[in-house]
Amino acid sequence: MGRLVKALDTYERLVLTDKSLGRIPLPGEIFEVSEERLDVLLGKNDYNEVFVEVIEEEKPVEEPKEEPKKEKPIKNSKKKTIR
Image 1 (cartoon, rainbow, N blue to C red):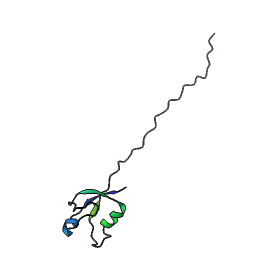
Image 2: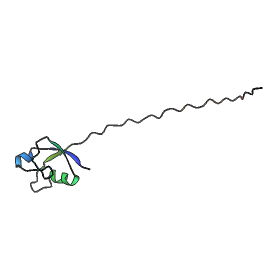
Image 3: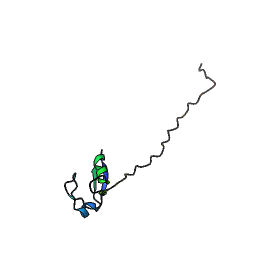
Image 4: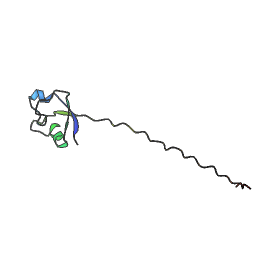
């Protein structure tokens, strides 16, 4: 699974083509990269430059669901006998 990133102006400033896209991404362009590729784009490269910003996807906070209340059967202590 990849990570969503947003391109910085570093590509244009250094006039470098992104290897996975095959072109120079525009600043602010969002695309997906692998975890290994992310390390390179975050500075572990020959240029020691950061090329992207990681986009954190917000996960909706799930509220605890209340279990429906079960109705208890009414117990009749006196048994009626039909005659």
